[in-house]
Image 1 (cartoon, helix red, strand yellow):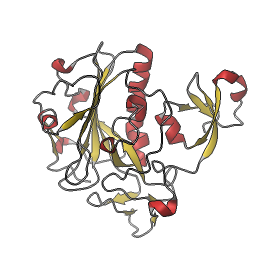
Image 2 (image 1 turned 90 degrees about the horizontal axis):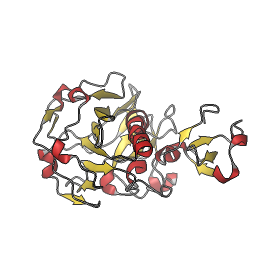
Image 3 (image 1 turned 120 degrees about the vertical axis):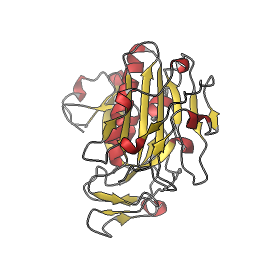
Length: 302
């Protein structure tokens, strides 16, 4: 995957993206800083790389404790732009996430390969995760992303922000910008920025690669093949596969601890220690639970 000539204008670009404001107040515009992603190295086995010395491009003028969410309008190719929010308890979800299978992001294909967690190559990746924004089937917040991008690249940073807000009740400026080459329908990756408002305890600026190890992706169309082997994918139409979720594995039953936000296999030894008022049964996939703020039990490793 080449990053030559990939230039992302942070700030001045955002001002021209025709944002719709879905929060309680309008965000302050970003500064006039630009960053040339030509310096982003090609993927070499790491899911992400730090950018700009791990310092986000927010200006001090943007620091606010007002809640907001901004989602760029889709462009002429149906592609998402930057998603920007001030993450806080006010905008985080209070109910379980609903279905999102009706949304077909640019470049979307329902395709499976053996060896991928859940088999599906692509997820409907939230730019701003549901656990941070309560945005569910918002087409302006969902891109075609690999399982690897979604779970190995983006999710740890989403969890970091969620944990910080839940523990401190503070605010985090958070922006995720998909990066496309020319008229490609699938993003090469996403730039993720975060900065805590009330203190300096949380800050990062990273680029996550939209790749899947062992799979070659045509970013112009979203087509894919097994690396060095053409035509080995098991492609299905959404109607044939019955897909109504974000490309996940077969549904499984788990036991939830609503207090600790852990999920367990039904036969896990820790289940007996869960108080009945905190115990709940869930049938579905692990990705849905993770996006709802749950994490797997370390004993049973579901």
